[in-house]
Amino acid sequence: MTAQEAQWLNQIIATEELHVLFQPIVDASQQAIYGYEALIRGPKSSPLHSPLRLFDVATQAGLLVELDLLCRRLAIHRFAELELPGLLFLNVMPLTIVERDFREGLTLGFIRESGLPPERVVIELTEHVPIHDYDLMRQAVAHYRDMGFQVALDDLGAGHSSLRHWSELRPDFVKLDRHFISGIDQDPAKREFLRSILDVARSLDCQLIAEGVETAAEHLCLWELDRGLALLQGFYFARPSRQPPLELNMLLPATTHLKSPAGRTARSILRPIDAITADCSVPLVSERFRQHPGLRCVAVVEDRKPVAVVRRNAFLTLFTNPFSHALYAKRCVLDVADARMLVAEADTPLEMLSQELTDSRDIEQEDFVIVSPEGDYLGMGNIVDLLREITAIQVRQARHANPLTGLPGNILINETLATYLAAEQGFAAAYVDLDNFKAFNDAYGYARGDHVIISLSRLLQAQVESAGGFIGHIGGDDFMMLLPLGHWENVCQQILRSFEVMAPGFYEEADRLQGGLHIENRQNMVTFYPFVSVSIAVKPITDTSLCQSLAIAGELSELKHQAKKMAGNSLFVERRGHCSEPVQDPVQEQVQANVAGTVAEHS
Image (cartoon, rainbow, N blue to C red; front, side, top):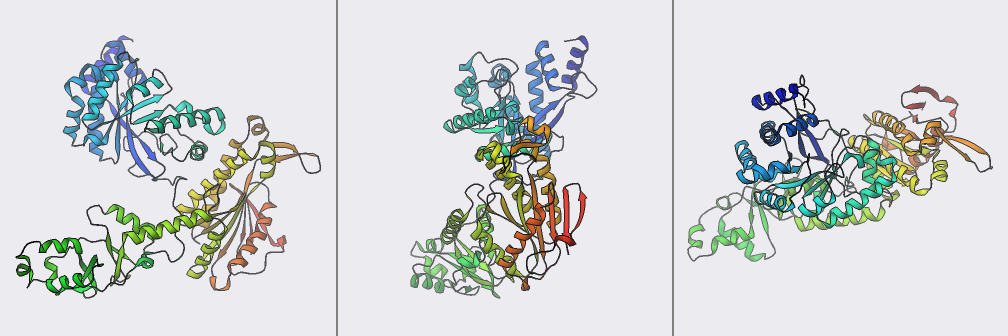
């Protein structure tokens, strides 16, 4: 520590001249931001801008506790000021906990000043010196939990942070040091280590957070390794910022639910229960419930529009004393009806309806009203019917999904293609497969080959679903995409660009340096095979009335062969909007180079 650094430290603490940054922690399974880690930087013009140097100097000067408490207070107030969603992960020095905060309850005071509930704050134990007194640390951690805080262990596997900390303190979260994530897609030993750590986390009922995710390949590898590893943090998602994003601005290849087959909407669970009018008397409603013991809920309408519901249990509780009948004999139903109700259009997909029910926590959810697009009453729905229908869909989708990628298989692809044709809105059908993939499989084995297929499937899934399209897995390395006419070109170009970047990462370093593999072909001759690449054959369909699904499949199969004739990542487009016999004359192709590879069009 120099005299200048000591002077700067005293000035920083006195003037509170610190900058608070926030880095999102994402939940890949929910496609959302889970929380933020608060990070501190010193003044840019000072030698203490780096947090490592800042805290090292504070430790040497005996001011670590003062600095840590100041950082904590500023971070809490700034988090509340920005109204950031989710949890606040707050870096805390164990030394500070046992010296002052444990006795004085300073963090709880900062929280109360800011208006944040303690349940939204995670105390992230960050070490600059080792823990010596575990008994005292356990008491401090229990003290925090009693106040409503959760506890995280930072940087597992780095510095002083060890498995003993995990065993002794039993944190709610453990953040795995970035060393074990960096390059994990190319390091089998790191993957095995992470599998072991995940097993420990599950046995201790602890959530693991992977820090230092910086590339799409690393994220795809984590996703393939274990789908339960949902909490991720790193530059790939967002860098630390004074004004961090409030929402996740990228679609992650994660546990996206498959869409329902055609017709699986609220209409499929509609029960045509007669409604009552707003001027109906209470005795008439009582009589109807008496005559129909299975009737749980009835809608109240005015001009065919639902305005309230009467729920059987709540209604019958009105008549629990001998004066109830006289009290309600001349009153109309609106006096006792509940205006809080969930109303769903008949064409609402069941998944969306399920989400609306989940989000409507202040409304009784057992029964809901179903209306036409014009808002006219059609009937009632029940949550039991909804769950039964969604379960049947999920069972069917699981039965017909590709076992490697979980994407819809051939039966669901054909059904969805027929649905797109019946909608008469136009779309682009695309066939995707890999080039030089057999050579890769032969050289590296089927396990590595499966990794390539899974990585491609997640890339396709992220791009297609961001455009509102459909992705299915035909089998092997073949996929089918159905895309909106206005988006298919951008989607295909992004897939080609992204895979071109990803492909070298699948190879060992020696093969990566030479741009591919030298292996024997079927004629026992050593042949060079460049990096595995993607071929996409696309047919935009503007007039669906002239097309049949089998004709489209046949034409795409032929177009795929044309695409595979071009080197590298390539796109072949059939520009004729109607369906015809498979393309037989590639002489008319017009070929041009672009950043993604090669593009050819047939028109």
